Amino acid sequence: MPQRGMRSYLAVQGGFDIPAMLGSASTDLKAKFGRIPGRTLQDGDQLPLDKPTRTFDP
View (spheres, rainbow, N blue to C red):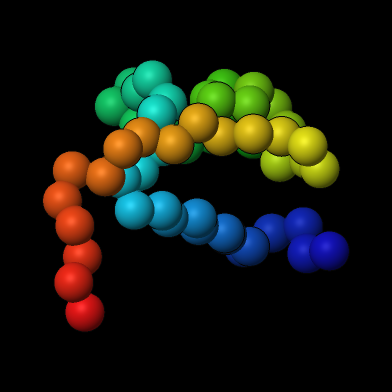
């Protein structure tokens, strides 16, 4: 696994129901704070979802 320069993003309709810290709901692994402090997502982790504020009609 790369040690530098790798990023991942996850987006869902309605967003995540996660309290913001310093204006963001992300996790910072280096600073060890965020929704899951100091570690990556693991099997079994659950992220609470917020309700969508509008519908999408393709």
